[in-house]
Each structure stands twice: as structure tokens, then as C-alpha cells.
Image 1 (cartoon, rainbow, N blue to C red):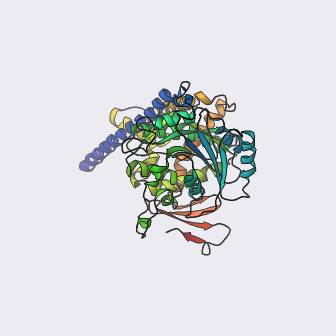
Image 2 (cartoon, rainbow, N blue to C red; image 1 turned 45 degrees about the vertical axis):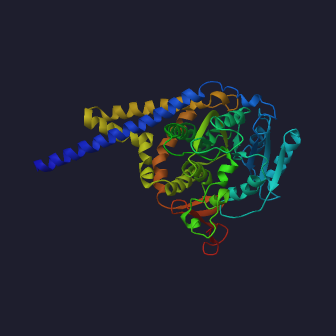
Image 3 (tube, helix red, strand yellow; image 1 turned 120 degrees about the vertical axis):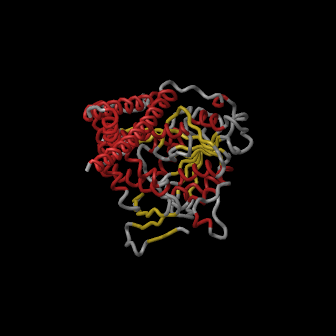
Length: 447
């Protein structure tokens, strides 16, 4: 009996040490993300030197806006790339259907800004299951410049963003040639949500993107041990993309494996996979600027929010090592507060409820400070918001985090733009099912 008690005590002690170390690591990442936000974003952005260059001297850039339907605030998001403080760029609006509802909006904007070099490309090329990759194929081929800036349709940017992105991209290499190993090969911005339609789903999504997601996104990119990129706003070289080999083991077994953008047509999260390819295959670094990618949220229900988070968790669990997926709940505030409070009590002796409350309050203050820092240069664009509503949305997000993770672990099937996809083997290929037909009639796998 005494021996059993000693063994249990030893196990408890080692468990407390493990969870205490994990708790310190999680808080270190949180504070690193917060510190990065404070240093990089909590002050007015400075103009880029490149922005003042004449068209004959400035590096040219092609902006590609892949479109499908009427996304939230589409006119304003597309208009933002027509008002850039940059002397040499073109804009390509990419669609796959001449009857797309976005097309009249695009034409209105082009008529308003005739001085901007802009054009429409409508292509119906389909080489895989990812519609965004299909939509980007012709623009990639027909772009006038090697430097490409791909911006999602829900994203708005400020006038100086392109100049600062190009300056960061060219920080250590010659504009006349593609970047080489060890140089910057991709520039991206942290996404920040704006919410004009204040439904609870939208408010919770905003609370997630502007606090937890932004904090961890900035921390992981600051540590820079691996690629961590979302595809809201990415600038890279077409020449670099053309050098990439498909990361899909099954596609690599084909007689002529697809290369370049086509090699990523079987991935749902092609942006993340392309960034990983630039990082690992070409040994190119990633850079961030002091700009944010303004993501306009639509009227989401709470179910919409849950479905969205479940979808990307299911994609990510197939793309990352299993240990990263299993540890993810331990980076959330409530779970971290529970095991951290217990570990401190076991090692040092303290009151668990009091420790948990101090932990949660400190976590909230860090999140709110991170949010304020990131919103420094966009306060004139964001609608008024109630502090009480912000706190309730934040609390709802924290309470939903673990149930959403558990739900995401139960299946590998996701729904995206009206279709069901089965994420297979590290995200290497995707099967999809048209929801309007039976599963047996409409299963398609790209090989």
C-alpha cells in the first residue's frame, strides 16, 4: 500500500513537471505573439522607399484576385487594390464562368479606375479538385510580371501594402532574378477580421482571428522553425513557383508528375502547401510586413463558425505531424489554465481556483492588447463595437475551442462551397462529392 502511494506520488510529480513545462512553453508563445504585435503593428506604418520610384525604376507586380460569386463587401475589397500607392502594377481579376455574379462588380470597378492597368481572365481549365488553383492557372501564365501578389476576394488592403511587401521581398536579392536559397521567397500579412454584420457567428470568428489566431500566427513566424502561412494575401515569384515539385507522393509516381502551381491542384489548403514547398524545396524564407490583411466577414451563424473551424482543423490534422494536432487543445486558454493551475499547485502549493482566475484574466488582457495593436492602422475602417460584446464573443470562442477540436477529430470529411471533400493521407489528395447527387454517383479522386 505504501509502495503504491509512493509510485502514485512519483507519477503525479513527473506529470506536474511535464504540464508545468508545457504551460511555460504555451505562455512563452503567447507572449512572443503579443510582443511581436506590439513592436510591429502598434505604431503608424512608414511609407516604403520603393513606392516613390517611377514606373521605369520600380519592380513590376501582378495582383491576382481569384473570384467566385458575390463574397462579402466585394466591391470595397476589390477596389482597394485599384488605389495602391505604387507606380508599376497590373490587376488580373480571375473567374471561371462568364456568368459569375462577381463579373458586373469587376466591370464597375474597372470603369471607375480606367487609369489602372486591369483586365479580366475567364478560364475554365480544370486540372484538379481545388477550384482556386484552377482559377489561378491562366493568370499565372499570362501575368506581365514575375512578381505575383495573390489576394483572396474577401481581403482588402491599404494603399501602402504593396510597396512594403515588395521591399520586404527584395530585402536581400536582386529584382532582376528570382530569389535563391536563403533569401526571402514569400511575403504575407496576418489576417485581421472586420465585422459589419454583427451576428454571433461573425463576432466569435472575429474574436478568434484577432486574438488567438493572430497571436499564434505571429509567434510561430517569429520563431521561424517552419512555414506557417495562410493564403489570404501572399506575394511570391512565379519563377519560384514553377520550380516546385508536387508534394503528393501519389502524383510523384506518375510518368510526368505535375510541377509548379498544377502540382497543388489536389490540395484544399494549396496556399499553405505552396508556402511549405518554397520553404523546404527551395529553402526560401518568409517575411511579414507591418500591414494586415483585412478580412471582411459575412453574416455567420454560430453553426457556420463551428463548421468553418472544424473544416480547417480536419484539413490541418492531415497536413501536420500527429503530435501537433494532439497538443493543440493544450494551447487553449481554458485547458491550459486547468493543467497549469494543477501543476503549480502540485509543485509549489497554491489555490487552484485562484490560480485559474489569475491565468484567465491575464490571458484575456494579453489577447485584448494584441487585438488593439493589430488594429492600430485600421481604426478608421472598423465599425464601432461594444466592449461587452467583444468580451462575450471572446468567452464564447474560448468555451467552444475544445468541443470543436473533439468534433474535428471524429471524421476526415469537410464541406466547402457546396461540396463534400474527404481529406486523405496528409492532405496529399482530396476526394469530393457533389452534394446534389448521391455519394456513389459523384465520387471523384484526382490522381
